Length: 255
Image (cartoon, rainbow, N blue to C red; front, side):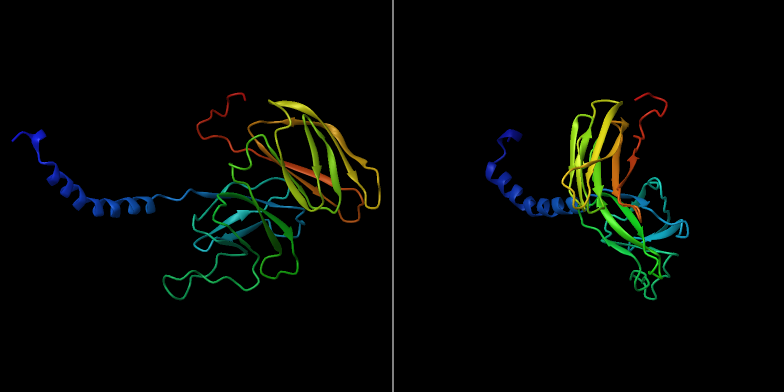
């Protein structure tokens, strides 16, 4: 009998016998697929000089010492892919007394909750001298690249004042205590005009806040905070860039 004359019913029975084994293999392969790495950067917004310059970031599995810069973002830190919460401590937590259980952290430690969709985020710290474990509070800002792209600007209004203006080719309008993502204000690496105004409490007309020129870098994301300095009636604008060079990019190559 030739190979192409092999009885079809026999082949069908063989296929049906193999089908359950194939069904077992496929889910196992999907489960073994590694989760994407999770990353974060830290900023201690308006952190006083008396506050710590470094703390230990604990993700439920491991702890690492992290910088708490005031004027720029920290280096990029990797977080365990299964982490659901973070805590900041003055030192690495002591090992758990029972093997297989996570270390316990001190009661009252500053913590932040993570959602499963957060693959990249910012930890924005504010001063909390009343916390005796670590004198900070943590706020998480989702910064996943799918929603916050290179060239875009994340505006974060921490005041009770409405802000409006023109940034290059974009119009800005941000309500009190809110945040928005603004698309790139220019098409390439270039300077662009900035004219921002604010609405003082109880006033019907806006007043000038900032008129200048900024530089757009399409390789970088920008985060801009609107703050109200203590004792002031005029908001302050504080912006920083989040540039993460591609590992394959030649650092000497012009943009």
